[in-house]
Amino acid sequence: MLGITYHYNGISLNDLTRDALSGEIFESESDRANGCLISLIETPSGFHSPELRHSEESRQGQHGILDYDTFVGKRAIVFTGQIIAPDRAKMVQLIDKFQKAFTTSAVPNKDDGYRELQFTEEDGIAKKVFAKVEQMPEYAEELGFPFVRNFMVSLKCKEPRKLSQEINTAPEIKSDVLGAQIKLPTKLPLNTGWDYVYKKTLENKGNFAASPKITVYAPCINPKILNRTYGVFMQFICTLADSDKLEIDVLEGTATITRSDGSTEDALLVLTNESEFFYLLTGENEVVFLEESGVPPVNNTSYSRLEWSDTWL
Image 1 (cartoon, rainbow, N blue to C red):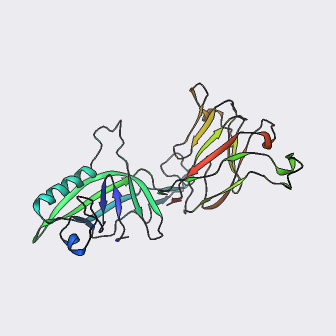
Image 2 (cartoon, helix red, strand yellow; image 1 turned 45 degrees about the vertical axis):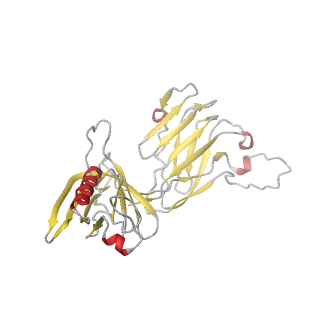
Image 3 (spheres, rainbow, N blue to C red; image 1 turned 90 degrees about the vertical axis):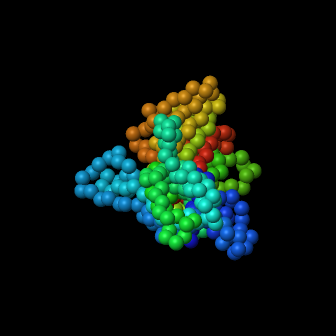
């Protein structure tokens, strides 16, 4: 991962194609030799795997929980490299730019300090983590090279997952019932059989469970989102009418009903006891949207949408 370019808070590390100060593309090797660079001299730590902790004592509610006995620890990232400039004036400007990128929040109650750290690994997939400065940059002059500074800066991640930069959005998933119960117009040459008609197959290309955002649109009664592949669902005992909508953010652990008049309600209060937070596990997931109004799906205008990032650990 030494050859990978990282982008964080307006600055790029290990980008040998552009001037680190001006952002201009190098047209030749001569331009690069006389330009400003921020290069890495060691492979950044913390990208391959976060800490895993196993315990014989079951606990709940800890950061990064996998199950009651296994926990994902923190993901800490350390960058070590060199800041290179052609003269002292540009060296001062480049260090100033570096300092401003890797700084802490002055108003933590308004800004938690986490920024996107973007990179593309060897698999060619553009990924990101959310990280903040854990240790401010340290500098040391390189003996014999007055315009070179060695640096080290340490970041900590908001949570251990690596996410794809691209957000996947599923086509709308209409409300459904088992196919044999659906009455279709006789002119349609469709034999549904005993299966869901409007199911969608959604793929998480990562190696860890993805936390989707789910939106359910009215009209519907007691909406239920089912991951049929793994038998996990979320069902809410409520009625959505007019322009009401239900928004579920699995990563944040929230579910909110927004009514037509703009008022909001905490939907977790009407979540059934059998429900679990809905994840898209590695590979293909067959997802179904169900509700209990009794309106046949061909006449039912309610639907749901999902969006998610492929997720790695």
